[in-house]
Length: 435
Image (tube, rainbow, N blue to C red; front, side):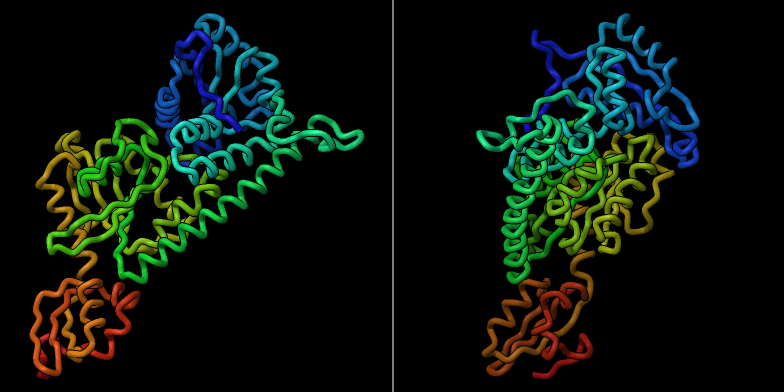
C-alpha cells in the first residue's frame, strides 16, 4: 500500500485545517487539549502540510455522525472556503462512517491523527523491517474503515479467478487486505526471528546493551550520534528517525557497550503502530539499562514522561534498570530547571556539551558496573578470565602458577545474566586472598 504524501499536484504545500474535539472524558483525564493541538500542528508540518487555521470544539461526547456536530461542520466548511484549505486533519481518531460523512459534506480530504502519524512513519521507514511494519499498521487501520473510504485497493492483489461469483467490490478489497496482512505478518515473523538470533548472539558474547527511550524529539538520536560518533539523522522534528540504530559506545574504563536508539513515543500513539513495531520496541526489553531521555525545555514534559511510562509498561519494560536523562537544559530558564524531578539518579545535561557527555558516560558505567567482587580462577581456565573481562571491569589482577586472582567491578544483574560460570570462583570478601 502506497503512503498518501501530502503534496499538491502543482508541487506546493497542501493547505489544511486542524480540528480538535474536547470531550468530558478528555477534560476528566487531565490532558491538555491545547498542547495536543500544538503537537498536531507539528505533526502536520512534519508531513509537509501548511496549516492555515485551527478549530476547537467542546462537546460532552462526540457526535456519532459528524464527530464535531452538524453546526460545527458548517463552520468548518465556511472556514475551508475562506482559507482555501484542501484537507481537514482531526486530532482524534474517526470512524469510517464519520470520515465518509465529513468528506461528502465538506468536499475535503479527511485525515485523523492516527492516519497522519502512519503517513509520517511511511515516509521515514528505510529498512525492510520498518517498511513492512508501517504497511501492516496502515492496513490494520484501514480494514475496519474500508466502507468509509472510496478507494480502489484491487492493486493489492487480483487477477483472473480471484473474484468469486456475486462477490461485491468491498468484499474483494477486504479480502485483498486480509491476504496482504497475513503475508506481511509472515514476512515480519521471519525478520523478527533474524533479529532474535542477533540478540542471542550478542547475549552469548556477553555484550552489554543500553537502549535510548523517550518522547519523540527529546534528543535521543543526537545523544546516539554524540556518544558513538554514529552517522545518524538528528533533526528538530517529530520522528526524525524511525528505524532503530545500534552502535558501540566506549565507557571511561574502556569497556564497550551496545547503544541502541529506539523510535520515539507520542501521546495517542496508534495501537496498530505499537503492535506492528513491537519487535523493534522490544529492544528496550532486552536492554540491561534504559536511558530515559526527556526534553527538559518542553512545557509538557511531565505529560510526556507519563506517556513514555505508559508505553514502556505496555511493552513489559517498566521494571528495567533506568537512568533518567533531562536533555536540552541549555534551553531552560533557572526557574524551570528548579522544578525538574527524576530522583537522585537523574542527570541534567545538554547533548551538545562535551562535559555533560563525559558525566553521562560515567553515570552509565556506575549503573552498569556497580559491585566489586574478587574472583579466584584456576590458571588453566582462560575462558573464565576472558568472561570476567567481557562482563565487568577488571580493576586488579594477580597471577600465580595455579591461580588467577581478579578484582572485578560488576553489576549483580550482569552476573546473573552472563556470569554464572564465574560464581563458584567468587570469594566471600573483597579483601580475602587465597593464593
